[in-house]
Image (cartoon, rainbow, N blue to C red; front, side, top):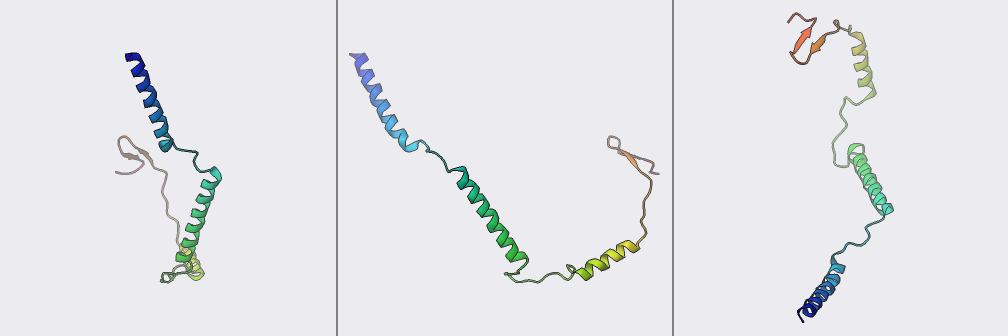
Length: 104
């Protein structure tokens, strides 16, 4: 009689657990197309916000005076007018921190 009671108890427990797991078992997740579509929409939204804040200045502000063609050309001409300075190749030892070829 004990075996019958334990078998009945076990079958009742299994029935309850089967009924309870239908609420906790995850079903199929979102499809890859849904995930990819959401990702693309997020990137597009971020791009629109970036454009509006950076280029359209929807929150106010102004473009710095250094971001002009005139400024870029003047900077390039100034850099090209300077003489380039360089020394010989220096081989450094990362272990002893000694720079070969230097006077230190």
